[in-house]
Image 1: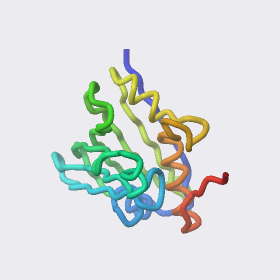
Image 2: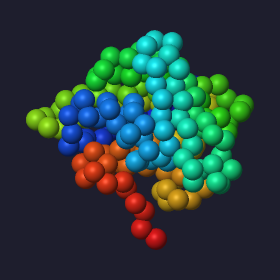
Image 3: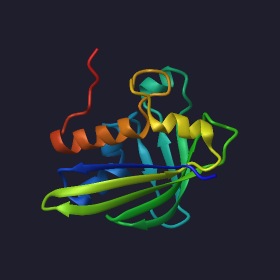
Length: 160
């Protein structure tokens, strides 16, 4: 039985800017769970997401997600493996980022995560309705933050 999660949003930004937000630490530290991403965008290239200082202070390791680039077609498509280091008993899943111009100045971003055989990861990335609760907001939180940063220039800040 396969489990695929698909998350789609529309962003008032160019595909090039969305691609940059996905693949560079200058943007990744401003949304989602923050921290720096590092991509070698060649097939077989290494991917890692480093924990933010706040995450490290909460006991997370320095590197929280690792993976390998399978396909890279800037600024349209990125396929990679995705392995959260805190879930040790599951193999990496595959994440596909499809970046498409939708209308003038608007980009449709579709994130597809193949979670077949990865129930713990599937539960966590689906997102908790309260992003500050245990398990966090998953992909919905990450994508909402990415959209907010690109459209406003400011991080998505939860209100107490």
